[in-house]
Image (cartoon, rainbow, N blue to C red; front, side):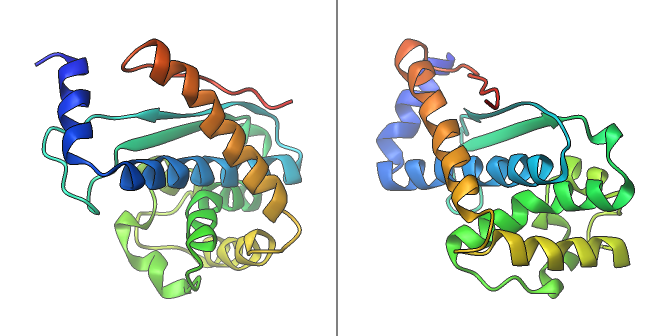
Length: 179
């Protein structure tokens, strides 16, 4: 089956509101990483969100959109890397209006493998440094906090950057470089 056929079938089965919500969550997640890296003075190379077709889409367990943020994390210390690593998941929880509870983080699927690696923790086993990063990120990324508007603006930019790829080709990756 060709990629455009998968996308067509997926769109027939997937309500547009769920598809848009999933794209927004991916953008908010990546924007969390970007906002915190900027706050810490860690250069961000690029960030993007992209569509991933799922043959057997089973909401809410399967995501149709994913993202990636590349920053110069090697220039950051361990504490800063933990902050950048947890920022995406914290941003998602804040955007959804959920309570950011430290107990969530003992679930291995709370963050992606790459985010866990950035925190230098084993998945589902956050250390004291990671727990402290979660507390700090919860404070600066909550609705109305100091970075909330930067987070939303960056997420919007990431979503807008996907528009040309959806119109021009069925599957593509559009990068966004911070200004």
